[in-house]
Image (cartoon, rainbow, N blue to C red; front, side):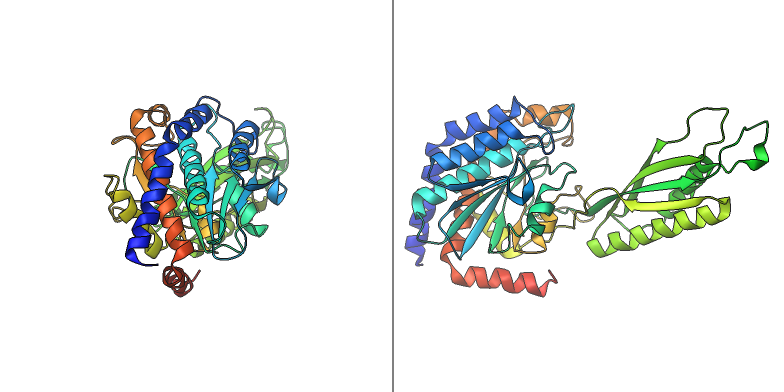
Length: 393
């Protein structure tokens, strides 16, 4: 593809997105005003898949045995680019992570790519991905093979920074339970084995462990069951622990440390410990530098400049990490407010602001142009895959 042809394609894609700007914003504010939560995003999935089906995409609903997941395909075979759409909200906060904007931008990019390239350039796959907020829809879709025949997965995330890539950690939750023996605390106290005391001791041990963990490693726990009455020595106690680490390998090491700590506490207290995974594991995100640099270049034409993330700063976890282990992927952040944090009422308000509208249109255009580069430039795909394999995916 010559530079002239490439520039013409990019200009047409941006024009297609601009023409749809009002409609895309209506989708974004519609989702914002009707928040739905993990694995229950029925109206959001229906609206998005319906828009794609109306435009000529072949839609498959209920993929990966998830009622609110879908794929919408234009074209077949390779090359292929996937555009993950997120649309779940946070209970009590609504779209305080801006998933309404992710969905609208991905939708706009998919529609523009089909309108400009048709079906001859390869496959455009819009993927409806439910339950990013802890449910792991992309984990289940990746395991079901949804991303197996894809050359790149492209999405953006609204935030309070404008960064070329997302420093996202690996994350999982574990349930730890202790079994003791009930007794009356005054009538026969020596007969009791206090499961709650064991659980509290585990918190103490993990607190000491936490002080020497490496950067980005973190353990946060809550007590979910601690007994039934004050005049009964608790025979059962349970805690839920969230674990994070900079890499998936480091997270596996941390899980081993938590398991060893629980077993040590059980030995010391005469209880029996049970340690089981309570959630799907989110892998750390592996950025495709080749493709994220292309996205940043396209976004700069819309007047938004991205910079590398600040060293040592990590911004949570996402199930896009599990996709990034399989295919080259991008997940840049684009600011919709300058201070504060997501997962707050202020961020939820920002996700329906005029600035958010401008970001949706700009991001949709940049995603579409990056998608076209993947589909039309063999050397770009080859370089992205080469680096992906080299970096240990």
